[in-house]
Length: 386
Image: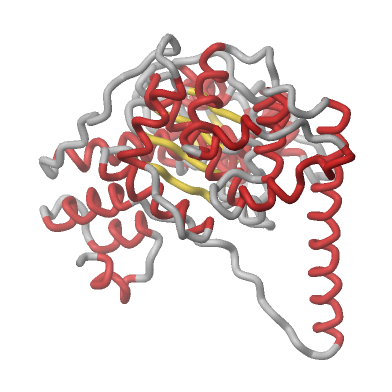
């Protein structure tokens, strides 16, 4: 079996970047193997090509990366993992892969903008946790809030577009069902202007909240990787930064309806936990039912016990709908009706599109690179260059 000489320092650099141990790598390589591979076969200057390819399935650097004799340097500019020690989530391998992917996207986007003489400087001011999140949110609504009358997916798309007007690039990524290593985070902010969101196709309102929350991080210029759920939002032991970002996100999305939410009588079983009022609210603002109930918890307008009961009922109803849809698919299949579900397509920020267009027109990138970064087929390029 062929072997290849590598710069072992480069592999060790990636281990440090991803915060993985040698044992983690061995576990990955030995998955599904009858004969185990040992550390002495992997972490040396000459390695079997098949082992190196399996290792690169984790890092996605290409084999030439490991051959390069240049010694790697631990630079803060390379990764948030060299800039911060702790995050608001225990990161899965899939999350680390996504963060590294978008760190590289950030560097590439910045380089292309500079080469194209495109100005991506910050437009919005900096804020701090000493600033009132409600006042900041209401001010930013006048610039960035998409408005009413949008379906939630369209709301998300317009929100991303408005951020682009202020030189903030919001990326989406999709973890397909067959992806082996999935991300366990909802979103993150990379300084100076990158927000990344995991597409939550069945919970787009949560994704909208995540986007508003990460916008809060942008305003504070505090990098973070977040696993945002209802318990996270209602957690009173959060850091000042996370509490500020949650408050900002709530006021940004609730707007003038905050006054109505605050005026609601306590949600108890006798008034069906204010379900009618909250359902009507979700028709006016992009907050989910659970997000509104979470707000009521923080306002002491619902007990923790009742909140947990309501939340359980909402999740159960959601699961029942999923089960009904799955049953319908199975029945349709028995009847010979086959519907192929497609993975959602990530929303492309207009700022990313503009940067790539400029780079293409300036001759900095070619058609192949443009199509690859826009995730389009070459025959569709003309419609993306307008």
